[in-house]
Image (cartoon, rainbow, N blue to C red):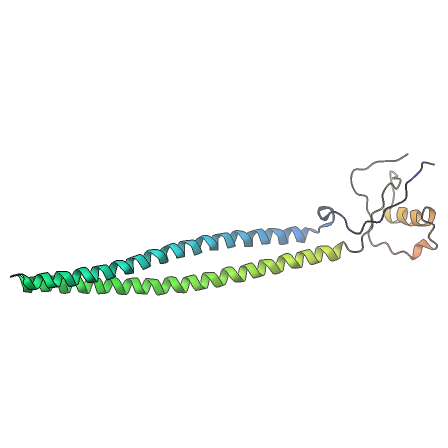
Length: 194
C-alpha cells in the first residue's frame, strides 16, 4: 500500500471550475452594460462639445449686436439713411431669429444632457449592483466545498463513495455515512495512482 499524505482542507476552489453557466451570462450582460456606458460617455462628450459651440455662438451674437449698433450710427450720417435703416432692420430681424434658434438649441441640449447624465448614473448603479450580486452568489456557491488531495483514482469509481471510504479508513471518522456528500468529482486530468 502506497503512502498517502494527509488530506488538506481548502475552503474555496477556483471559480472557473465551479462557476455555473448563468454567471458567465451575467458577466456578458455586464460587459454589454459597460459598452453602453462607454457609448453614453461618448455622447456626453459630444453634448459638452456642442454646448461649448453654442456658448461661443451666443457670445458671437453679442458681438454682432454691438456691430449692428455701430452700423446704425454710421447710417444716420449717410445720405442713404432710409435704405440703410431697412437693411439694418432686416439684419436685426435675422439676428433675433438666429438668437432664438441658439437659445432653443441650448435648452434642448441642456435637457438631453440632464437625461444622459441621469441614464449614465442609473446604468452605473445597476452595473455595481449586478457585480455585487454575482460576487455574493459565487461566494455562497463555494462556501461549503472541500478539496481532498492525493486520493487514489480507479478506472471506474463513484467519487462520493471514495470520499466516504477515505473518511472511514484514513481519517478514522466513525459512521462516515452520516456525512452528507451532495456532489463529488475529480479535478484536473485523469491520473491512476498505483
